[in-house]
Image (tube, rainbow, N blue to C red; front, side, top):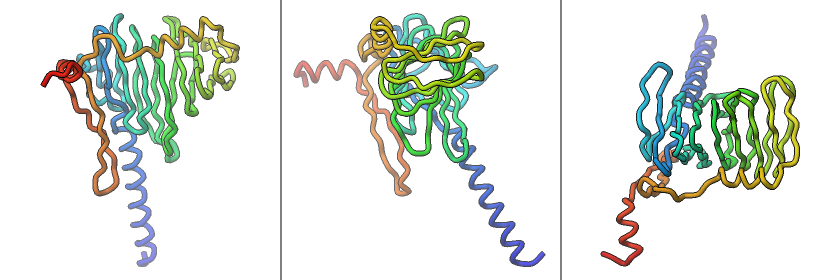
Length: 249
């Protein structure tokens, strides 16, 4: 083998390692962090199938393959570490977070097993977000929407802002603001106008920041010499917030 061939093989090997590392990083990286725990503040985090779960903590980072499940009286607010998008998981809900590389794009997937979530997605180059349900997939294009999955896997997606593309093996449809889709795994999705009651329910799913917050957290983004950005969560105790508001030292 001549020197040129050896050099070509070496270059190919380096490129393969680089792309392989990028894919591995995408799959192993943090997907989101626990931003707030509201009401009872009880959510169980299970790192992988067959392992024991533990009580979630504010500021905890959720990695690829983690399952999260809220109690009947808990809302959890999550923040995605790559683009800052926000997701709220409502009471009695369970989902699995995954991350994968697809042709150079980091795809974050929320596998919604049951329950309800609200999310507002920020467009970010090189990443995309999907919500997988038993009835199909909601592919996000930069928007605010609600997903509900009942005990039979029937799925409702309602868009409050922007556009959501929903598809399954029977078809696909764009759901624009003020529209909804209700579908099961055996049916083709069809968009229809949401009723005022539907919209009020979706806005209620958005929730607020009240309800026995487990402390206050400040999010700080720092950039290292290589240009990489990291998010730090700094806790400010609720008592300190109250004392400052009331003018105490």
